[in-house]
Image 1 (tube, rainbow, N blue to C red):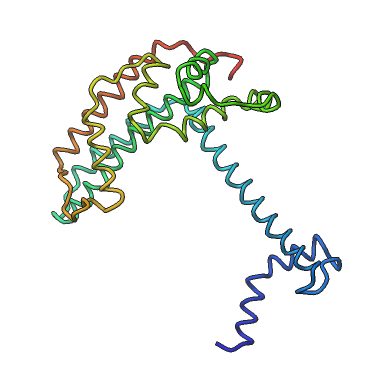
Image 2 (cartoon, one colour):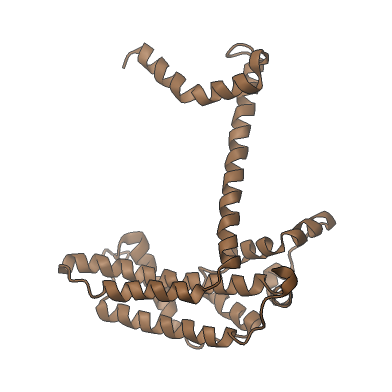
Length: 254
């Protein structure tokens, strides 16, 4: 590639930077290579980083608000499970079927995790009593320290603060999920050893396309997926029966 073409490509890549510096600094940016120019370039890079942070914060706020205001986690779960059941009836070759089962296993586990997360976050963030219960019973949350200024700031965005904490903390760790449902929502899971095993298998499905660390296929079948669907549905609907007794969200938190 000729030097002229390389220079043209470089200029095209940097064009957004040149335009930003021209708009924000004008002649004060000086010549390329000067101290003023380097300061302008640094300002451009800082602005890019700031804009990226804003975009990430906006994304996560939308994500968390979905958990907070989602009205029917169980309805979403039921639709996802129905899709799994229908896909199990699709006729494909043996080789393709294994790939399909790998995806369906992962999708079923993800559906359970999503239900647990959205249900817990929705119930807790919409109840002052449950937020207080969470703070009193969760060792990590209860020891979190805030300055006086932060207390007022956090109070204004209480739902998002709690939702972000919960989303980051527990919903890929069933050892934390189970006691939190019990302590905060007074909801017992019973024996969910099957779900712990399904999560372990899901790891192989997601990260190695259904192969274990020795390169062997994981033990999944149409029958195992049907059993996983059955157990998952039973767990979710048992939870629904329990949490239906929880009072409606506090009006002042709506």
